[in-house]
Length: 231
Length: 266
Image 1 (spheres, one colour):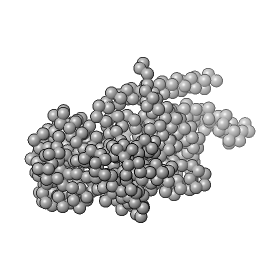
Image 2: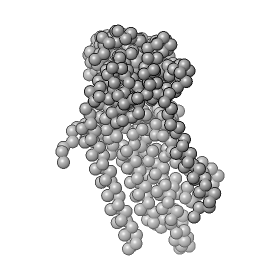
Image 3: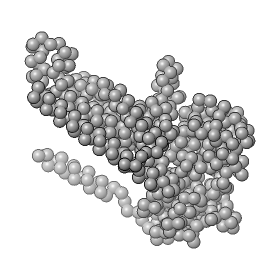
Image 4: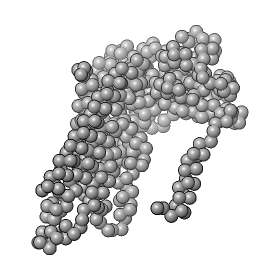
């Protein structure tokens, strides 16, 4: 395999960092949201469901623009976070992670929600009759059963985050080493006369990363499934 | 099995999807134009439609993106680029009709600041742009690919300040996106065309880059090699006529006469 140039490493490393944090930080929220959507009965549930799915349906550039208006330096949430906690998303890699997390969230929630709905409620009831409280039941019964779904959701989310482009470039532009992720770098090269060879190299890297993630997820999901069956 | 009523609905929806895009009539022209032309060319397209009854559909994007699309076979009749390089690139592949090519417009690049009352900045060799930016970003179109970014980078290099601000630049995919970042106050300064700055109320032009600090900004126009649309040639002619000139000049462009334009083409 040919060695990567510093610019290619930079884009790849940044994409991995952005996608890792986007997935890691949205996973707990995604799990909770999936649980609420799968089990909860309350007014406004369909509105919550719609909101969660919005980034999946909206054009990414709209999501990016809404993020810019909300979390930008002058946006209501962005200004509040900056003034009170010193958290800035604008033109930072954290903003790219936020955009990736928002775009990946619906896919993650869908995968987890399906696995929760497939759990046999009688198993949870049985744990309850044996004296476990609801939280403990969730930890020792539900969570192991839905683990393959959670893993699938996390992998899907990670893959979506790796590929996110439209919302990211609209929200935090394209700054080398800060917000120029793999897709943004590929797009940049396609826009330069004679940039096709570099674009193609990065495209192959993106394909390799995506295939590795998919194979890894299949492997993990199979192991988990076997452990549950045999355990 | 779905009840038949649902199936009918589904069939109706499918039929709608298939027929919703009406075929373009011979009178319609598809124009691919640099993003910086948006405001002025919208007016020109409307004026042309009013006069001829045909419809001028304009797809705006960075010249680089449009050239790549035309290279890939996009159904454009007319291409208006914001620099000579991308037009030359298409010409080198025989994708434009060289006999129809001429240089239509010229433009300037300016330094803009967020807000409506920013103080002016003197743009001279070695001027203190890095100090003005502080922790903020300088919004520019992609400095390697998009014409507005390339002119901006060339000007900053000529003035000897590129090295100081290189790490502070937020690059966007086209010049209007850079304008939007400044208009929203996200970036304190940006480099855009004078015509972009005129189109946006929430920014102030704080300085104009000297014309000799960057290659001349020229907008060449040509018919694509593939077009067989008579309305396209008509639109090209309309671009140089008085009503279109007035609209383009009102936005801050300089409309070049065919004779000057020929001297610059190349």
